[in-house]
Length: 236
Image (cartoon, rainbow, N blue to C red; front, side, top):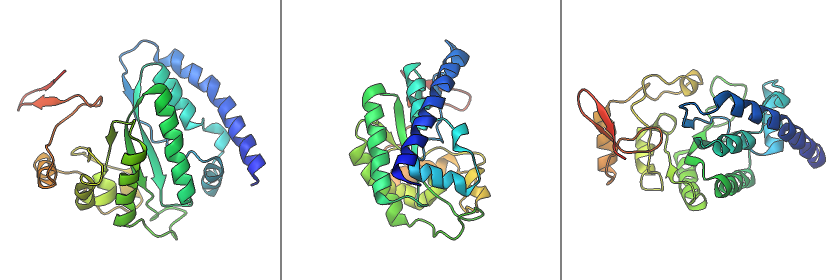
């Protein structure tokens, strides 16, 4: 695809997203929803998006540009995460451009709470011939994210994706969140992940403490939580 065609694709996607964003505003209104999860903020490069989606015979015009969805959510007062799926067909330049786009939107909306780098897991996918990411690349992305996205408060090292051991090391490379105990994870395990489906709270505490960090339980808005055997309290 030429650069001009990629630009036209981006313009078409952005136009299609505006009506969707307005529909989301009408749907959510003034309800109790305060934050949302974005798995769609994984690919922001127009050409890479087109190539990636066409691999799986998707119609990209049915998918609104993720930054526009995030912008609309933030303008409604909702907080969200943002992600980057890496280790597939993208280049290092694509990753840098992705970081820049996230940083620019955060400067405008201040709606992102945390950035989550997600390594592509090729097993059981149409891209199974692609090698898996290394621990070095995983930690490199954490460190670069912390440096470039200094306007996003938190960086998550998703232990199910990068294994508990690498996630623990990531706490010394810029991450301050390794996710929770989790009950059952589907996406990575359907792609052949061999990490555990969940982790006991005691083991999470041990990983964090041995990394020289202080464990703190939080809610979805990153407010500290105090837990007892029968209840938990948000500390505000």
